[in-house]
Image (cartoon, rainbow, N blue to C red):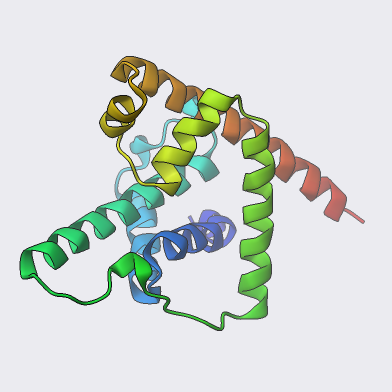
Length: 175
């Protein structure tokens, strides 16, 4: 578990920070994601893909749950404060965090370019606009089953591309 945490905690945190823009909430998401695996290791099914994309998906889902819960609380309270998504928590991140985030972002951008246009479209709608699969189906005028297939196929392809990139970068690090 320690090796998994050491390897994946930083990208999980970066993803949570990107979505939540709040350090404490991002840390909570990291803890929750790894506790999910600790308490229910059977929730990760190796045949469906590698651990990295799986733990990132868990973190993404937890982060979106937090955003939705806060949005509901914000709406219900009638508070006129700035939206959670509009706040910037850390205007001056550490250089190592900036470099890590830029590297991950670059790898993801490169991987997205390799997807087909329909695959890229559903990934962008889900991950960058936060739409549910039902909302994507309605917006695009496509059956829900087709959306689900595109998302599943796109995520698998994206995981393959990122795994290949990780293997190549690890080989480049070998002296």
